Length: 292
Image (cartoon, rainbow, N blue to C red):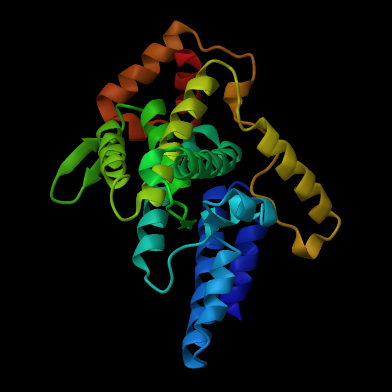
């Protein structure tokens, strides 16, 4: 089938980490929908609940110890069958994750995605077990929202002056969009989806810390990169099933090069004339390097 081949081609390509992350989320969602439909037709609802329990992460420590993989798989699983959860998550990831991928490279987008997921689940579990307000509450966390909020806040921290053109509103700085997301999530921590909104805040904090550390020469994604490289080497022995989120070359901002003032002035002049979006990837990396 052409669709299957197109998907395979995407996973074989280099430098398209964002597309691969979105595809993984969509494929898991489609599979879950098929299982849900089967469960409905056969009147075996318990089957779908079992599947979700092995994807989502519980707020119970014992459950997590029994199913540790859910600390990661929950970030690729969404509410089924409603399409809105995954749609808005993937839309946000496409917008803000695209900025991270363009400016810092796919390698860092992948590490940010996983770090956001881990920070999100950490805050969720800690609050549900140690904050009196949530005492006695049990939850099952699913969704990429923590990772998406990590990308949102990371983008706003990296490029606070960058603007998105919103329908009916016009150009809005992404730092204001990030602030709106955080406010809504904060309000939601005392409402129905408290666990999900706590995860949002954990992911948002991860996004800020990720860029804050990176500007000071500390890459928090190195352990995740090392694990990914190891997995890629395992798959590289079987060419037909090889899947790599990114190539092993790091963006230019990692080397010792430091742009001089003349180069920076030229870049700033270009921004004033044509806007930030007109910069090439190399120019964006030089600007980031200078900000360190």
